[in-house]
Length: 333
Ligand code: SAM
Ligand code: DTB
Ligand code: SF4
Image (cartoon, rainbow, N blue to C red; front, side, top):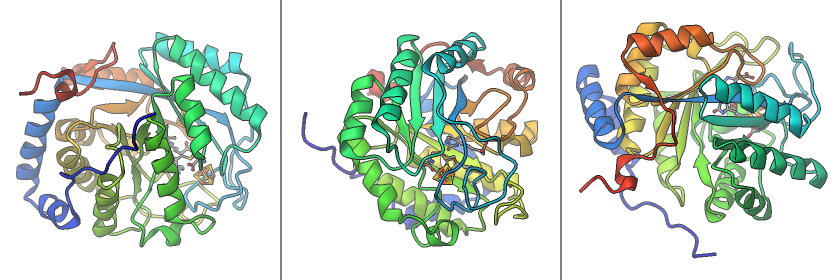
């Protein structure tokens, strides 16, 4: 194994992010669009399908989550799925056009070695089908990250969710530093980082931008950044939280695109609350991936036929092969 990856020297700091964020809306959008077109095939949208492979009874107290054992939520608990059942779901997703398969488990961290081995098999099966494979299993040791790398994992999803300052308002059963430790383990194992946040938890714009600053200071540039909007879950402390304005979602996507030109930006949970027009702006601003399929982990997602119709009406196209940003392919001089 080589030396651990180093932090970026060109990452934007909070002040620089704030200046971009506060630009007049159209100026921000056109600058983000220019960065996007320079680095990515401009019509491509990657479809990712999510599957909850183990649902509910999670000991953590994340105040947005349907799976926490501490809240009385309308969730159907499910133990770890069989590898074959997961493979069948991945086949269905691929047939429908998904190119990445993301598997989530309601765990604080993978504890049982037999179950972890089962997840490694799921990763191997998905990779064997030629899809990108992503898992989100909670906190990870270095050894577990290495095992996931050896199974061929494309990226590990572990969201920072918000700023370090706001984090204790949302989750008290772990520290921000625990999140960062896992992301360092993932980076050092050579697995791609998928890490982003949730908008609409009651945070300030500063919290959102500080989260981006922290993502930029990680030892490896994230391979993908999911931008979720809170999906309010009945029974959780955030059940009655007001949604945020779609322009704020678009602004966040645009700033993320400018700060991370080569990172895939996923317009993630909460897309159901966005109109077609707002989604179009988000794609324009640099989002180039969505969760596709009728379900997220425990909640509904946009209908598949509506997503296909939207992509077609905008003259966008579903990515069919694994695409890297242009500069990685060497086409940028
Ligand atoms: N238990 C693991 C963990 O927390 O890292 C993995 C599963 S967890 C459900 C994955 C991510 O989904 C969370 O980090 C959070 O960002 C997002 N998420 C969970 N519930 C959400 C909700 N109601 N609305 C938006 N995003 C949510
Ligand atoms: C991410 O950033 N969003 C996904 C995925 N990573 C695992 C999860 C969204 C969950 C939305 C609420 C639910 O369905 O429970
Ligand atoms: Fe558990 Fe993850 Fe939900 Fe937090 S977000 S309660 S760790 S499943």
